[in-house]
Image 1 (cartoon, helix red, strand yellow):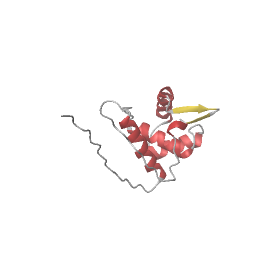
Image 2: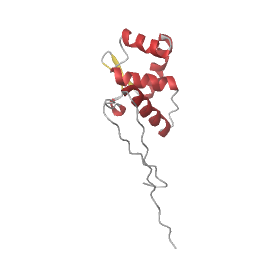
Image 3: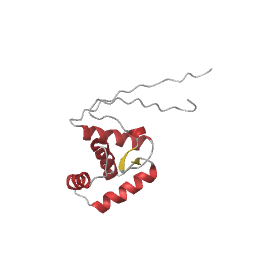
Image 4: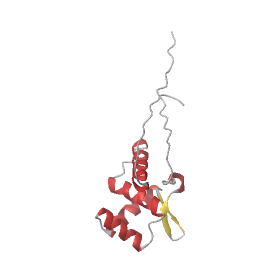
Length: 120
């Protein structure tokens, strides 16, 4: 007797009031699904970079430091790590989120995640 595989569908809804919080949630999910093990600060930096457009300008870095009570040296270390991972990329003189994982967080985001047992 052959067993048939069942597909389970679960819908989750998360409501966030601002783009930054939505971006944080998205990059947290991306980290969890891909086992990237981002720290909370790394997620905050990726989200902030996605919303601000880049992390190259001094005033943007200072704004991040003030908002998250951190230092410029810490940001530089995180940026270096995320660039090595390919999460952040250099576009000319700007450091940006890799376009492959960059969304417009002023819009609603719907993710479809499929986890397959065996071969897809």
